[in-house]
Length: 102
Length: 157
Image (spheres, rainbow over the protein chains, first blue to last red):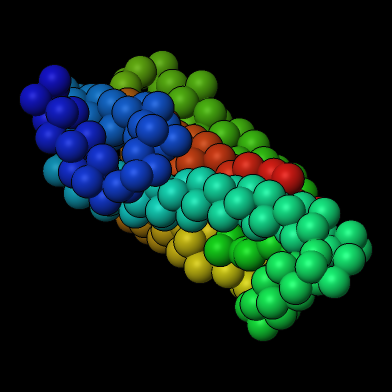
């Protein structure tokens, strides 16, 4: 599990770029959920608690979840960039209004 | 005074040209508290539905639920309506593509679960637990995605 988790987080860090630190904690939680769910599905199938049709549906649902996580991480990067950009604009605006006395 | 304007006026023009004077850029839609509440309500109904399957084991076969798809058709219909309303609400905002796609993925997951149970005469309690876990995680990510918009707008005037 540790190896898969590391690989997932490395890929996510590469995609998030400079904003990785702002999304890292959530990315780790989501990645662990995906791995734990996959392991549970495999365990229940091996024990005969679920059948192959259940497995197919559950894996499709997990793929949907992975897409939602991807959307979340993309929006988290946008939110961090937006907050940083707007903070910079506030500083610039403040400097200009002070200089221009408006 | 003139010197101050000499410094500030060109910069003001630049800002005005960019359309950002005294405003902020938006890469994301504004936070929508109605969407947040409706997502929470839909999650509660999904939770209640799957818990009915989980909490009613068959005495003769405790791995299976006594609950059936047919007996819960109304709950499925209500949840599908709630998810449709969420989709419409998400579509009503600009810069909201991620949230719109996330709602559609939840609709797809719920439809997959519905189709699977419609076709079954007996529902596995272990499977209902897995499906509930995944649906809860999906709603958590969706609601967190909505809450991000507050963070993106922090400091906005």
